[in-house]
Length: 204
Image 1 (cartoon, rainbow, N blue to C red):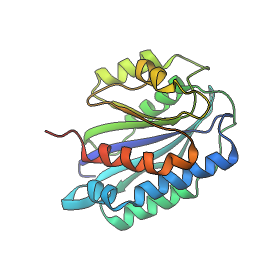
Image 2: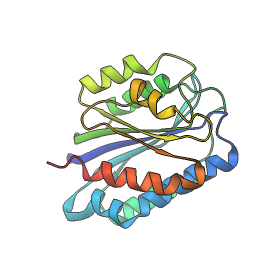
Image 3: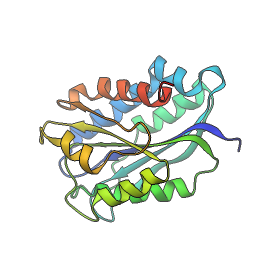
């Protein structure tokens, strides 16, 4: 497989703090963001291409690759991937919040990526700080040292100070950032804005 511009893992929180209604809003909101014209253009416009994967996580030992690495080089391929996001099953037990374990699972996924990428981004979406499994900080540091960017989207409905936790323990690497939304009804727009910023990459 030819090298791509971006390898992107979408790592979504399926822990007990996320209700089934909220989980549906995550799936639908992320799918809508992937269908946004600016995101489509950023991923596949002007000859660009990417590989995408979808990872669902909750507590320790509860990580599942919902959609394995998928090459996206056309709008149709991206639309097909977005549909898998829209339709994703909740396959992990609704347990605690093990962000460090999720990052390790992302590292394993990256080790089996089917091609090289100019940029590598892990997109962590959650509504709570890590409270299970290994701490995320050391894993984040290891990934950042390898040139991997970890970005965050924090849903603040249960923990208003969650951005501080993500900034200190989760995000890292080249150009890393975190964004917030107040609650799940606002998720789709926050995810859209975040993906636009991610797929366009750092402004040089």
